[in-house]
Amino acid sequence: MLENTLDVTGKKCPIPLMKAKKELKNMNSGDILKVIATDPNTQQDFKKFCLRGKYKLIDFLKQSENYIYHIEKT
Image (tube, rainbow, N blue to C red; front, side, top):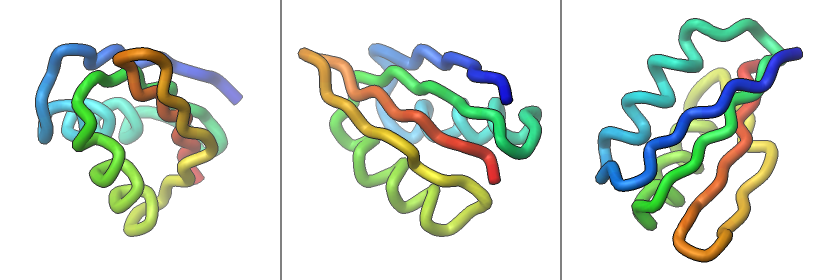
């Protein structure tokens, strides 16, 4: 199990989700992607994305201006 980090701070939706999809596509099952974003709209986007796809939202944390997601490829 690997953990990759994707920093999309300063990017507005749909860019963070598009970049996360691209990164996850190249990962193996069980790998985790840590996404660091600043756009509050990513909260809904990532939750919906994980519910519809082959991904599990393991953790969500708001730290100051950052939204941090841990997404597992299932």
